[in-house]
Every structure is written in C-alpha cells, then in structure tokens.
Image (cartoon, rainbow over all chains, first blue to last red; front, top):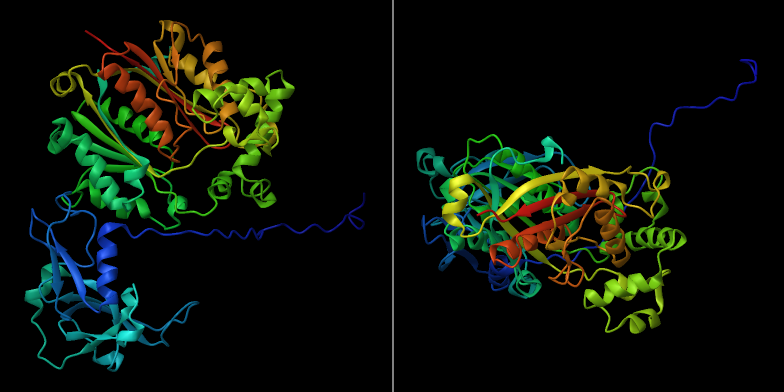
Length: 169
Length: 348
C-alpha cells in the first residue's frame, strides 16, 4: 500500500466509560444522634472519656485514644472561625453563588472545629478569630442534615485572640 | 516450599475476632473498627504499644465514599502517629504485608483489620468494576455473569452440576443436592444456592513474633508459609475451568508437605469451591483435611473480609486445639484470579 492510499488512523487518546452506581449510606450510631439533633435545631457533640476532648459532629471513636465516645453534650450555637477560605470558582452542584466563604468554626466548648459556610457579611470581612453564630433554617424546614444550619453569621463580638484558638487550627 | 514463602522469623496468628453480620449492620465504619480492634487487642491481653505496624484491607467502592478507609482508621486510635498501611483488597493481603513487615525482626506484633459495609444497591455491578476497564467493564458484565462463565467452562471440562449442589449443601444454602438441582437457574448454569449471600462484616487479627506470641497466646497458630499468585487480568486469555495461580501458590506454600487437618477456602461462588479444592489437591493437599468446617464464607460473605476470615478461622481451629495443621485460602479479583495460601501449624 502506498503512502497516498494508506488510511488515516488517528491515535485514540480518550474513551468514555460512564459508570453509575447507587448507594444507601448508613450514618451509624453517633452521627445518627447528631443528625437527630439537627432536626431539633440543636448541636449535639460527644466527649471522649479518656482525653475529655469534645467532638462535634461526634464520631464513632476518639481518634487519639481509640476508645468509644462517652457522654453526649449539647453545644452552644456560637463559636469562633479558626480558619477559612473564599470560594471564587463555580462548580456543578454548588448551592451558593461565588464568592462565598467556607470556614472551620470552633464552637464554644468544643475541641474540634465544625466545617461550614459563613454568610451575612461581605467575604472580605471574614477573618481568623471572628465570632459567629449558627443561622438556622425555619423549624418547619429542619432536616436530618447539617444544612439545617444555613450558615454561620458574625455576632459582632470582639475577635478571639489567635493564641486562644491556635491549637484547634 | 519456596524459601521466599517461608517465615524467616517465628510469626504466629495470636488473636482473631469476627463481627457478626447482625452487629456490623448497626455500626458505621469507625464504630466497626473501634469494636473489632479493641476486641482483638485489649480483649486478648495484647498491649497496643507492642503493636509496631497496623494494616487494613477494604474497598472504598463498597461504601461509595473516597478514602473511607482513612476515616475508618480513627477507630484504631491513630492520632499518636502509628506506622500504618492499607491495601485496596481483601484483608488477607493486608495480613501478607504485615507478615512481610514482621520478618524485619524489629517489632513484636502487627494488627490487621478488614471491613466491608456494603452500601451499594447492586454489589454484583460494583465488583465488575475490577474488570479491565477497556474491553470488559464497558460490556456491563457483572460479577455473577463472570462466575457463570467460569462455571460453564468447568462443566465443559467435566465438572457436574451435582458437584456445585454439594457445595451449596455444605454451605447450608440448600437442604439437599436434589433440592439445589431443582432450583431454577439465575445465571445459567448458576442457581441461587451457588451465589454469595452478601452481608456486612469485619474482622481483626494480631500476628506476633516468637516469645511475645507465646506470652499472649496459649496455642499460637504459627505461620509456616504464605504465598500469593495472580493469573492474567483478562478473562479471555485464561482457561476459566482451572485455577493455576491457586495451585501454584499452594505449591510455593508447601501445602502438600505434611498432612493437613483442616482447610478453609474462600470461594465467593459455589463452583469456585470445587475448583479451589481441586487445585489444592493437585498441589498435594492430603490428610483428613476437613473442608470449610466453619460453613465457609459463602453463607454470610462480606466482601474484602471473607478471605481474611477464612485464614482467621483456620487459625482459630489451632487456637482451640481442634487442629494442628491448617490451610487458609483467600481469593481476589474475578473468577478466582488472584489467590493467597497460608499454612498454619501448632508447635510445642
């Protein structure tokens, strides 16, 4: 076969192989307690009986001690932003219009930060140490979901010094 | 037996626990790991600080959540940093890694755990994703259909449906051979009693060296040897009526060198048990060799757990003084593609 009559074969560099799978997730005992709390618009954490760390959301075991969690503790809806980022990029499934803020919120009395959104202020006002409180959805809209907290909003209190939250960042 | 597959250090399985499907189905992954790890260590008098290596086996596709095994690790108590590893495979391969690690001789014990909470609606479809992604997976063939192809190849090579039915009876999945043969086909030539009964589950195991093993366990199950071999990933180039990698692994592990009291085989589908036993016999398996006295892994089978469970049950028989030499088998991949053999012994 001469060069001129040789069929042109392009390299195959990609192929589509879509996969669709359905799952039924199981929350487990501890997360179930937390989610039921959400439906009642309460934030439920648990305390490690060994190191006394307060985890929220509670988890099946203390990652430090490896023991089951101890007593339940209802936490206040106020806290401090330990760290945050401003989301400027749009992506599929996004609920808020960019720019918006994702933050780690250390609830008062908790030892680990809760990851959530910050609203109610300009993104440029958000800072580490800022005091915030949960903005709940209406009682009728409360679900077995962290989204029962719409986002956290500034309380207007003075910032907490970084030295006080440093070990929780 | 190959020198490479023999324990260079004295290493034994000293603790093994299984979570019942009923209990496992109530817990999330962290709770599951916390429960089994504390039972296999604290519950067996093994101090956590003697464990120098932790390794787990699981598959994130089962729960459909990326890095689920990292979240699950919280249950093992990991924040004081531990030396840790994971295989995206049955826990039997985590055991293999731990066994290799212990041969360095610098740590006393290793913890192995494995969990499988099947959150997928169609597990047969999830399992098919382990097929080659270019030629096989896009056809949409599922795991039961692959097993049916294998069973057909076995029948063509001389096996009988009666043999498959006998496995179903032994596993408690059919009341009699006749009853099994009277069932309609689900994936010809497979019937319902040839298919796995998937369940949630988890197991944990501790292996330890020499004197430390003797100090925490009255009758350690010494790992004489371990070997694992894989056949081709492509079903098309294999003779599915045979399990050559299983036979080769059994030879490397020296299965036939002494009489065996008990064999625990991990065969996800019934006909594969026939194939596995044939391969073990071809590799020299002899002795009284009770086959799957635990009922095997088929009646309640947790994916990624069942292989380590088979080996753990072979160890438990030695712990209890019911056997002095046992063989545990684990399989991975489609149609018994990848096989691991552990030979366990009692020593006075």
